[in-house]
Length: 177
Image 1 (cartoon, rainbow, N blue to C red):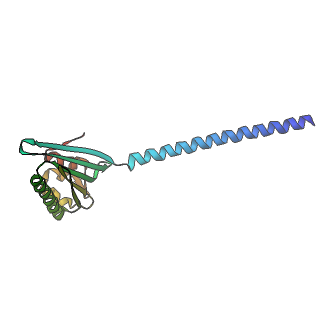
Image 2 (cartoon, rainbow, N blue to C red):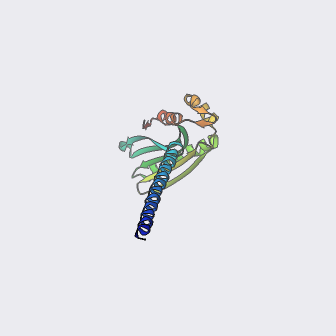
Image 3 (cartoon, rainbow, N blue to C red):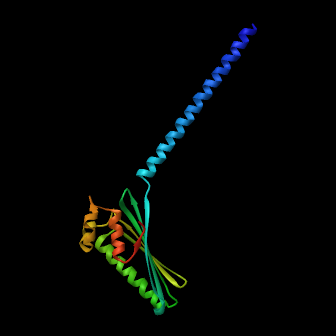
C-alpha cells in the first residue's frame, strides 16, 4: 500500500516536471517567434528618417532662415519628405515677404508636380512654413525634367533615397549619410 502511494507521488512529480519542461519550451518558442516577427518588421517595414538642413544667417539684413528636410524612406525608396522653413526676424514686413515667397513657390510646385500639403504659421518673431511631399503622388517624370540629375534615381515611378537627397543638396543643404 505504501509502495503504491509512493509510486503515485513519483508519477505526479514526473508529470509536473514534464509539464514544466513543456511550458518552458512553449515559452521559448513564443519568445523566439516574437523576436523573428519584430526583426522582420524592422527590416522590411520600418521607415528610415534622413535629415538634411541648411541655414542662411542674414542678421545684418534683419533675418535668419533655417530649412530642414526630413526624408522618410523604406528600403531605399523615398516615401515622404517634411520641409520646415523657419524665418526669424523682428521685422514683420520681412516675415510677410518670406511667408508669401515660400507659400507661392510651394503652391506652384504643387501645381506642377502634385503631392504637396502646405501650411504656415506665425510664431512670435518668426514664420514657419511646413510642407509635406508625398512622393507616391508626385509626377516624378515632371520633377526629373526640372532636375535631370535625379533621372537615374527614378525607377518604376519611385524616387530613391539618394535621389531625394540630391534634390536637397542641390538646394545647398547638407544631408546625413
